Length: 245
Image (cartoon, rainbow, N blue to C red; front, side, top):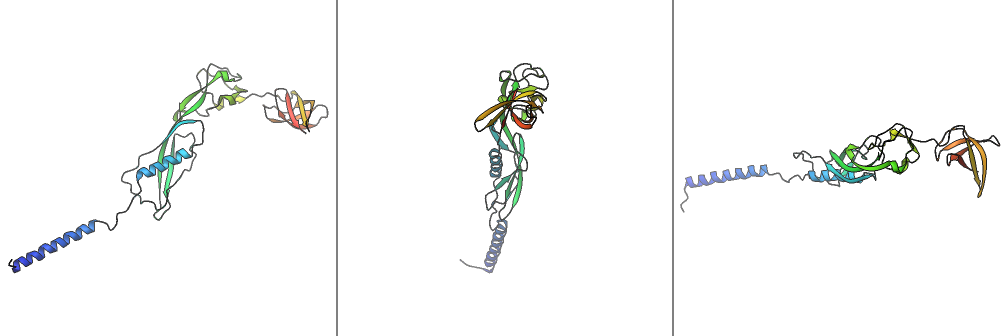
């Protein structure tokens, strides 16, 4: 093949163009691709945090769903395991925010909204009840409500309402809440009571007078009518109090 001056010049020109193209291509490709944290992994960490910190045993069929994150978001992959935190209580809240943070070489923090779905047992009245009615379990029933539909100050255990009375009348099928009940006073102030004193396996009964009203289990001052001495005694029933000597 005969190499002329023109052929040599064309060879140099094409080679120069090739080198320039290769240089531009190398400039477009970074020396090393930056690895980013998967958004799905961040959402999963937020969901796990919520489920791990729910302490209310009354919650049933609980699920936690993290909100969507901006797909354009690029956070450097953490060099150590991610950490999660919340600044408020999670229990009984249908919505919360979880902080997901990296404390590695390139630290960052992202706040992820999380929606909690669950069913909760709530005490309802079976029939219409009047103000002052003493509650019994036969008047009450448990119904399941979604977490986001719970009434304020709801109750989940009907057995705890025994010896409680209504502060106002309610219709059948109404939720019984804390602001509609109060503990019934089984001992009235000034009422005569029997003091049961116990010491070393011995039991002594004496007459007394309640100096303060009280409910079952309350510690109230009681005057011994024989000695005139005032003691602290525990309400046992509507007519007896107990004291350990």
